[in-house]
Length: 139
Ligand SMILES: [Zn+2]
Image (tube, rainbow, N blue to C red; front, side, top):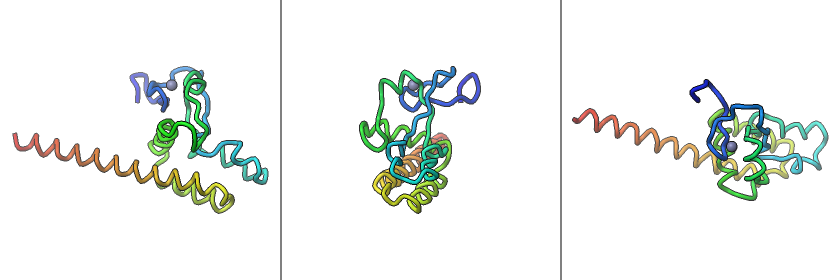
């Protein structure tokens, strides 16, 4: 959340997106990935578990092809989706995609590994918070 209310945060520069100068970025599966699939299956790229808002300028500067290119930016985009949609929804989306397009399994496996990392970081954050509270209680 920003001072101006709930605004999407660009996963690349971590700044809020305050204007319409944003791009919908296909973070996990791109149109290119689904080109060989039946027309109705190509809609999977528009799913909310596949797209993030990014500043137009950040999109130009820090392009990554989904699942390749910069691993840091891929991770940042997937984490942003996980923050908004939740790990269960993203996992379910991966399973649905694989039911229709098993060819996308390597990318889905990459995302599942990122979900594990994301959950580990969440647990570490909670542990840190709990330890901080316990230290305060001992003072
Ligand atoms: Zn940005």
